[in-house]
Image 1: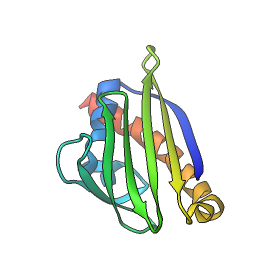
Image 2: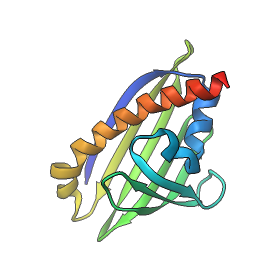
Image 3: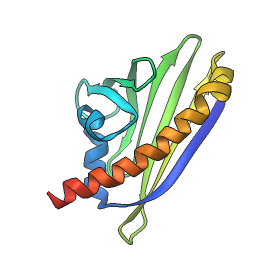
Image 4: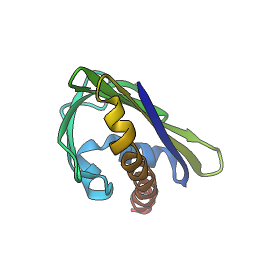
Amino acid sequence: MYEFSAQAEITADAATAWAVVADVNGWPAWDPHEQAARLDGPFEAGTTGWSKPHGGPATDWTITDVVPLRSWASECGLPGGKIAGTNTFEPRGDGKIRCVKTVRVYGPLAPLFRFYFGRRMRADMLKTFTALEREAARRHAA
């Protein structure tokens, strides 16, 4: 197993930031990591989705857990393994949110992620947090 994570503190209204995150079909409009995305039902455990990151392969995934306004998790299959991601949003009480994304890669492709994809994916996570802050501010002002 290989695990990596990234975290950042953003300024955002928690409800607005959560609405941005839960709007999977809208991810490509604000997230520089996502070229295309869709959710095949409500934003809840058991719902499947699909996304295509810029420069990466398209992936089918399943939401495995949702705690509204706080966290969501998903996983997708890999040959002989899987990738599981957890996203947490911890309101700090001062208009700030601590965002953390943790990715765990299981199976024979874990070393490939450690040496090739991990660093790039972590950098993309930080860009996504910055973009989330901008999009939440835009939607909150609207």
